[in-house]
Length: 613
Image (tube, rainbow, N blue to C red; front, side):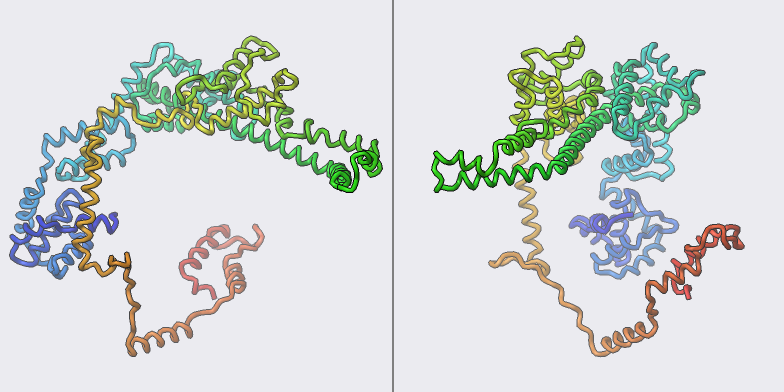
């Protein structure tokens, strides 16, 4: 339940604790007092009195600090009046307050606020315990906390459902109800269609996702502001709808059903946006891979031709680099080594690999422009892109905006002032040919640039979770101002940035003081003029009697330990369980079919391998 470090922190006695312990005259009373102090620090409650609740590890840690025998706790547990008196003393010493009506009201308000952002009961129970510990309030019985958590969870739910339902206009309300209707000529409801997600990236899958975005937008749910509702709670309602059937959703109350559907549509829309961006990247990567493979295959098929061209180049290079050949006779010697017809053939064959359609794999991507074009207009209409850096609009965004205008107008050619600043030096000669822009190449280059900008975080997508602006991942300033003071109070950190250097210097000084205070008695780490030295524990040395006993144990184990070869063991297991036996051949046992008996034998073999003889 608790780590050893947690137990040590709870059981570590302070100087103030030793002052209080000095008031206890008898050793078992000192041990019991120290144990109750450690217990209440760990559990935020006192141990049960009848019978006295013992946590052995805490008892041992407390006894070790006092130099007492842990068995003395048995004398202490028999003195119930002393236990009660010590609990009252400790409550006053540690300034602990009982869980009275005033504390109940505070806890209820705290849990209500927490339940508005957390759905799980376990998480709320943990937050309740943390709150009581911070407030120095003794923790009540577990059932009482569970009851308060349940009440505030229900209260928060009703509050959230009413507030969301109030934000839903009448037109949207009827649309939400229509999603649960299965039309006579259809096999599923509209809600089920939104739940479905494509399994593999493809053009059809991309179009399906883009259609889902349009369907959700058409409901008008994006007009409902849910920024006040915690994202974790929205996800909880999303999963509830995703796992529930239409019949189950109809059984919910109207306010709860509408709130859950609104959260489901909002979260589904944001998830679909992320899926669209992710699938866009995968489709571009697939086109790139296909172009690369196509280029590699062509290179393999043209290997012989390329080798011939390289051989010609080698012959010509040797003649050109020969200084004994004069410039006047160079041309004659070149054509004597390689004929004009052969040289023209080589130039024609390797021309495509130098400046033609095989010179760059980008040409292969251009050949797949038709596939990309099937979803490109819908993709640009669905995604709302913004740049993270304030200032002049980037060339990529300007190009995307122009492409959307060209698509809307139905024009085939790009305007003369189409942005080309986003093109790399490698792609410019391919996209711009003799002053004219090749639209297919321009669009493919723009898509590659868009993918790179999204990956780099230079462009963000509205409504996205993974590709949103960096600021959206942080608490907004208005909410932070409301929780800022409480955060710094709980974390014991300075709220003023000017106090941070002094705070860090003080923490460092305290750490040095603690080290120097314990340095004389620290046998594990020593600092001297040679630097740090860590001591190593010497190996334990056995006397002659212990060495003889160890040798006797080794001898006994060697005689009684069974030596098994792995093939023999596998054969024995197969004989017992019949793994290699064909189904239906002698597989009936007293348990019916062989699977039940085989399972029982397997369990027996695992738990007691010596039974395999």
